[in-house]
Length: 102
Ligand SMILES: [Zn+2]
Image 1: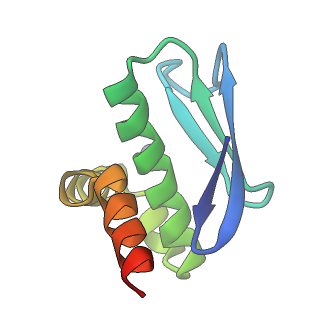
Image 2: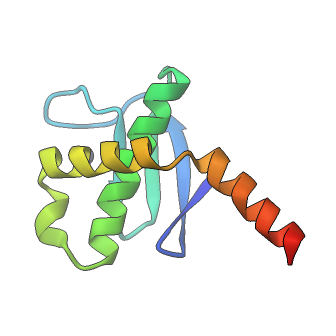
């Protein structure tokens, strides 16, 4: 699966394990390689939230706010705000409707 972060395609890869300090990491973005690793076994809601969290890291890096990418509380707050404000399926349906009306 691929997701777009500020127009740049990122590969999403499901993996068994993600190396981290506490061993509890469920998602990880590698900015230079444009890869998001997601740990297998998450339920769909948790997976979605984790993916949006990693994409938020990517967005902040893309807009040049590297100072904020390591602030996990800020990233998670923004990710929650985004995920609670936009239903991706809803947005796609609205876009389809707009296309049909043009
Ligand atoms: Zn994070």
